[in-house]
Length: 454
Image 1 (cartoon, rainbow, N blue to C red):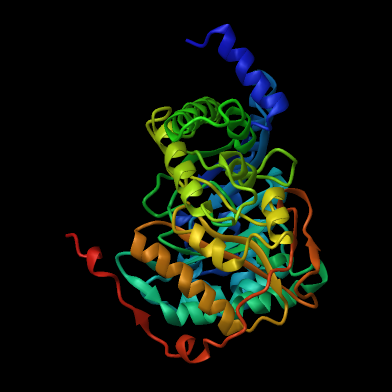
Image 2 (tube, rainbow, N blue to C red; image 1 turned 90 degrees about the horizontal axis):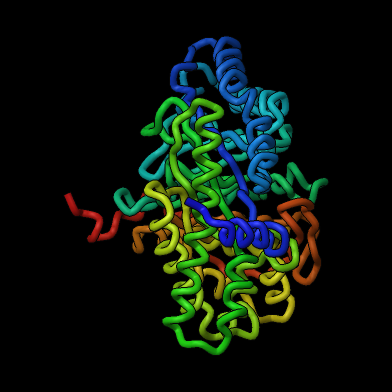
C-alpha cells in the first residue's frame, strides 16, 4: 500500500526534481516477417509493427493522465534487421529501403524513435551483416526516427576488429552524409560490446532473438531526485551517502515498475524489465555530473570522479533490484556529454577529457556517449577509440558502448547544437597520434581467459 506521505513525496519528485519515466519501449519480434521477396518483407514489417504499436502512444498518455507521471518517450525496438533482411536484400539500397519502412510506420504510430536497424557481429560478419552495416550511412541520412546499433564484441567471443575498422569508416561516412544537420546521423548510431537484448534506451535498443514475440520494457530516470536527496546529507559519511542513494533509487524504480505494469495491462503485452539507469537531460537540475559534484567534486573529471561514479552506480543498482524483480537493460548511470549540462560545463572548464571519460566507463553501465569530436578525425582514430572501449567491456564482463559524433566542418572549441533531449556539446579534442597499423591488422582479438566458464 502507498500512504499519503509517499504520494506527496512522489508528486514533489515529479514537479520539482525532474522525475520522469524516460521511455516505454515496445519490443517486437520480426522473425515471422522474413520473406525472400523484398516488397512482401516490407509489407509484413509495416503491418506487424503497426498492429502491435498503434495504441502505444495513447497508452503512455493515458498513464500520464491517470497517475500524473510524465512518460517522456514512446519507442519501438525490433529484431536486428540484418537477421530479417538477409533473404531479401541484395544491395545496401535494399536494406536502406527497410529503414524507410521502419521510419514510415514509426511516424504513423507516433513514436519518437524506432531501434533495431542493427547487426550482431561480435565474432564474424555474414554477407547480410556487412551489407546492412555498409547501408547505415544511407539509411540514417534518409530517415528521421530510425536508430542503428552494431555489437562488435563480447566477453565470450572477443572483439571483431574487422568490424571495428569498418565501423570507424561508417561513422565518418554517416557524419558526412548528415553534414547539413551537424552530422546528426551519428547521434542515432552506437556500437556495443556485450549488447543487452532488452535495452529500452535509444540508439542502442533492439529486440533480442531470445525475447518473446512482444514485450514492454521501461526506462526510468531520476538524476534530479538523487541530487536533491544528497543535498540533505552534505558532510555525512559514505555509509549515510550510500543508504540515501539506495533508498532514492528504490523509490524511482517503484515508479517505473508501476508504469511498466500498467502499460503491460493496457496493451495486453507481457512486462519485460525496468531499466533503472540515471539518464540525464540538458535541463538544469537533471544531471549525473551534478550528482558527482554533490558527492564532493568541484567538477566531474576531478580526482575521485571514477570512485564517486562507481559508488553511485552500485548503490543505484542495489536500491533498484529491491524495487523490481525484473531489472535489466543497462541499469546504471549514463554519462553522455551533450545530454548533461554538468558534463558540458566540466568539459568547458577543462576538468573532463576523453581519456577521463574512458576511465569512468570502467565503472558505469554505458560508455563514451554523445561525444562530439572534430570533423577531420581520421576513421582509424575513431576505430581505435572504439577498440579501447570494447576491450573495457570485454575484460570487465559488462556492457560498454561508443556514440561518437565527428562533426564535419567543426573543430575543438566550437559547439554543436542537436536540440531536444540530444542537447548540445562542445567539440572535444582527440589524441593526435596514429593507430593506423593497429586498426588495419584485421582479424579478431580473442576472448579473455576468464570467459571460459562452461
